[in-house]
Length: 260
Ligand code: COA
Image (cartoon, rainbow, N blue to C red; front, side):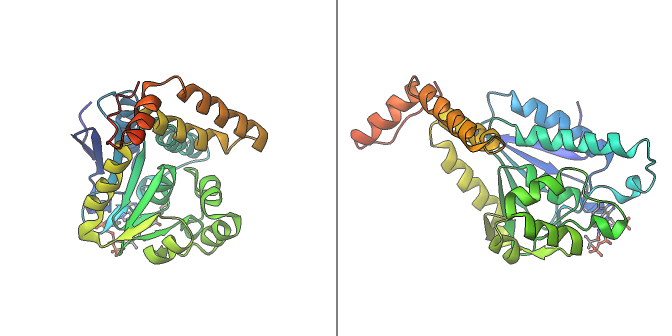
């Protein structure tokens, strides 16, 4: 598939995915959602890729929302499938078996905030603004925002962001745990890449299981989640990576993991 509104560049095991509609502040129209879906479906099963960094083109926006021009033409028959299509993309990103990290380089509003919420980690530039302004348009967040935001920042803060519809700056987003860290814009991508390369130095199977245990385990009752965690812990005991990781520590040398 040829992409028009996104770009994928692979470098040493990391796929850099950029939304490339800067004239519309990278707003997610139907085509862009379809291209992202195709891209993340491919990335999820591509063994040459061990992590993904997602960002937006330009210095102004990560993604300024779902495309309001398209939203304005929805009917009661088309709006639900539209929400489900967006939700399917966000579910695919969240379920990706390798770390997906958002480099939020400017506005992340509405669907853009929801896109960042579906990623496993979020880092922002100092000029970033994040929020869910949907109610000002007479709609509600439809790509998972009402569900993922409270799970990340807590119900009270999520309710405030959704009901007041007021975007918050990067510092506030960091304070409430919506983003993991804030960097000067010029340093954002390099800093995120450095963090991701650090993750890639650890055991690949352990990283994959940790993602799965947090993603799925936290949706279960505590006893089931703990059982799920223990099962992964047990499975890891049969991996070469565990022998290598512990052997390297005991021999005081860097580990060389193979992902087996
Ligand atoms: N959907 C469609 N187009 C969008 C968009 C969106 N979500 N966000 C921005 N754009 C377009 C603008 O219409 C404008 O296009 P034009 O030049 O053809 O008129 C272009 O991107 C630049 O945006 P502009 O509004 O001129 O930039 P700004 O710096 O004055 O304001 C924002 C930036 C982000 C504050 C403003 O664009 C905005 O409020 N966007 C909508 C945010 C939103 O409500 N998102 C949730 C949607 S569910």
